[in-house]
Image (cartoon, rainbow, N blue to C red; front, side):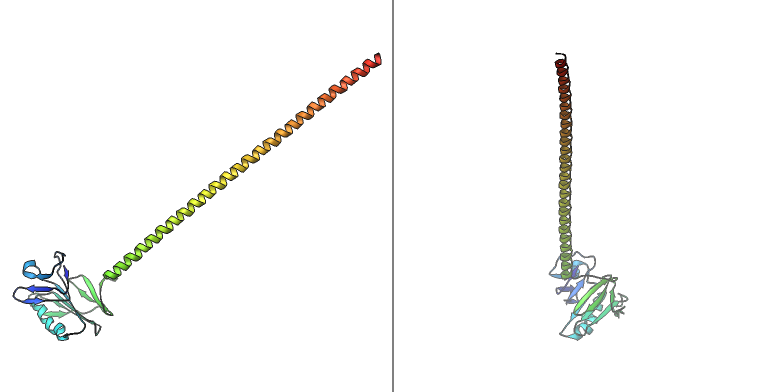
Length: 226
């Protein structure tokens, strides 16, 4: 359960109201308050955001009180001075905080399994070298991803349309070429038929001429005898 700015009640110890607290393994359903006695679990991680107000309360008083309440880790983000303080219970039975030593500017939270770093006015969480995005950044990333998917989908549709148009044009050209070949073949057949008809006509004319010459020769011979 992750809560913030709601009252946390400890049996016999009053209440606290951290800026952020985490209860590992608890039901994440929303609550208006957290009653440790009823929930059976206490916060194990607390983060206070120090901007203005009583610095001694967060930097001194709560360091003692949160340790006595058994809160395993207490982190403070000092926005004004761009600094983080982090504390951890080395021995829950002793309930005295030990400072967490930063590594490369990051403070590791054993409760969260994440590193905490202050970047400007933002408290950033890291998992290894990967920075966890806040809700607005997640929304923006999802929006960018959706836009990319829509663009890719549109490009795919345009590519399919272009390919379809190219295929239709190629099929149309192929039909035109086939029709041109058919027309050329028909024209060639017509020319061949015309030549055959002309040759047949010429042969008929030659045959008629020979017949006429033969008839003329016969008539001349008959005339000579007569």
